[in-house]
Image (cartoon, rainbow, N blue to C red; front, side, top):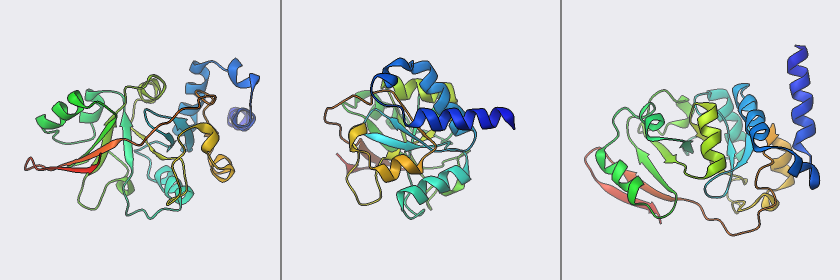
Length: 213
């Protein structure tokens, strides 16, 4: 209990650090705090290869439910998962079609692919048809975060459903900052345009549908 209380206090204190204090925190510590939060079933705000995201353990149904509640979003609308590698993705999709690897390889921007036969994920994260939206991140921070966590991480845009996505940390609403358990320090000072990923639906019969360019 004592250790949990110490961590909870540290997370709360870290959550509101700003300015020069942010620069003092090393990326390794930031990632460690985020990983510990997700392992406890918590929800984080973190920079991704696209816009800022709300994240949690994609295998934890209670954590996923928290994200839906924070987003004020119906749980019938599936969310994206981030992974760090091809090998990781294959643990959560029963049969990844060869064309999926080709699409990931030739993509010129972050690309999410909706794949059939999701396994080993929180049931409330998987769509009614058994599919899941997956993306292999190449961005330095989110890739290391996924690697250190050793599981897929939910990646849904940092906004209330229906509102604009937060391209940078400065765009995140105070309501969201208060709602999550940990806010990552990395890339908070960034001020540049970011856009959501492309989304492609890939069906088992080989049919390809572009959902979002």
